Structure formats: C-alpha cells, structure tokens
Length: 167
Image (cartoon, rainbow, N blue to C red; front, side, top):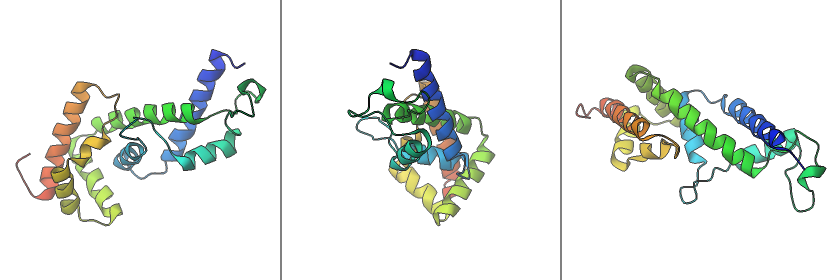
C-alpha cells in the first residue's frame, strides 16, 4: 500500500501538472476564471475531464476497483481526489496572485480578458456588476479579508470600465 509520503508525492506531482497545464492561459484573470469554472457550486468539488484524461495519459490510469492502489507503479497515480485537491490549491494560489496586482494591472487584465471573449470591456463589466458573477471567482478557501479586498477592488475596476464612476 502507498505510504503517506507517496500520497503527498502524488498530490505534488498532480499540482505541478495542473500548474503547468494552466500556465498556457494568457493572464491571471483567465486562469482564475478557468479554475473557478471547474468548481461545482453545489458540492465544491473541482472537476476537469480533459485534465483527468491528460493525467491518465501522463501518469497512468487512476485507481479503480480492478486495479488496487498498491499494485500501481509508484508515482503514476493522480486520480480524481488528487486532481480535486490540486485544482482547489491552484485556484487559491491564482486568486492570491490576483490580489497582489494593483488596480491598474487588474484593469488591464480585465480589458484583455474581455477582448479575448470578443466582448467590449464596458459590456462585460456592466454584466458582471449586474449579475455579481465575479463572486464565483472567489475560491472557497479564501479568508474573509481576501474576499473583501477582491470584491472592493473588482467593483472599482468594473465600475471604471463600465463608465460608472461610483464603485
């Protein structure tokens, strides 16, 4: 059976894989939106079938009823639980990276994100303000002060881009 050290190795390997996979996204906001989209709002679990398939190809097939964990080659298992943990961990890390950006950088990121979505930034901003869809970007593990900072900063950025100067 795999030891605790093996398990942390599996999780770290999976986390590094997730980090590498999302690094191709063009901005912090793109990574944040992508990771948030993988979270099931009802269960809080993260799931990405593409990453699961890539991990299975890269590290071998995940543990199933047919294949016991201790029968697998050490270092090749990265199943749903490890992927969920890695995505949860990376969502919080990217969220914290976003919080370190100043308002000018956040504005530029939002403008770039809107452009890549094929939507004028004022349209996207207005929609996010009305629907408060930005709240979904906050990871469940974020501390209260981080949540407040995120909402305050993003409301200011969104208000500026939408043309409404009152945050």
